[in-house]
Image (cartoon, rainbow, N blue to C red):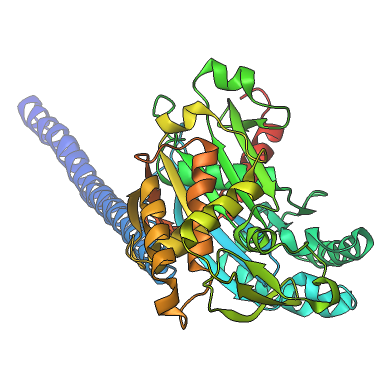
Length: 470
């Protein structure tokens, strides 16, 4: 028999062995498990850190790439940030001398007005109207410009990017049937493209639309549309066949006394603007020249006779081509005071044709096209940068040029006539001599054409159709 004391001692030893074996087994399991958990946490951290760094890298690369693209395309400065929306618009400007495509990229922060981040531009000659008798030939040029848009707009944006063509004077002057055939052919090409094409994607602009679109462009680029309380600016455009004036009246009298057809409503950014806008067909610089010379639009001089004008130097004789008709022209003999005689003739042409409104003297105006060209021609503004002048500067320049016309027969024979016309046209609009005008071709490095305003308004109208409650 084993003594009781010995048995007890043996049992104690066995009891002590049990927990020791348990601790050993637990240690063998816990150590690798803990090591695995630590390793898992470390790997997860490394992956998260790498993903964050990669995302940041690509974000920076995307912004930098956008900046480079913008720089190459002469873009307006833009910024990219989290939560911003990027969208595109394509506008074809079908003018009388050529067809131009503008591809605009916009960026919008939540709840804010969009900004223009870059523009791509390409032009082809001749204008669409040159294909009036063979519409099939018009497609290659349109397709070439569409290919430019495909390269510029990312593939993922194609289906959501509106494609629009607006035609101006060239198609406006064609017989209706020929113009419609051309537009229908363009529409067929557009429908076959991958872009967003609506039933109203191709149309001929009227003069008021042109003026309103240019007003949108100027006020968009100056930031006036971005800040509701900020005063808007007016727009003056002088083309070859017509001239436009557009501004936002703030005086009730302007709204009450404006003739029918001079006021138009515009919806932008959930606001309605009641604009004073009118296009004077026949009062563009080239059409005005013909009228001052005594000619009739679209008709050669009777029996090919010479058109004589007091606005040309007495010693001048020559030829002038307008709307594919060549006219023989000369100055009026024995002219004593060229400017005085010319101003009298221009006043006859403008009499009772222009509506005058008092409010224009209190609105800031930008002036474009021939206003700019003539001012640059005689040194009133910098030819590259533009500048500001007062209305009276045109009158001073006109008097000087008319007085010295005979000594500059080799120069522009129409300079006396053109400056006198611009000076009196501005006065007829109601601008006082001391009224300051800003003349420019670009604002924030973006061309001040109607194309930007037209596509911007089109995109805004699409947004309202999708979200009428907003």
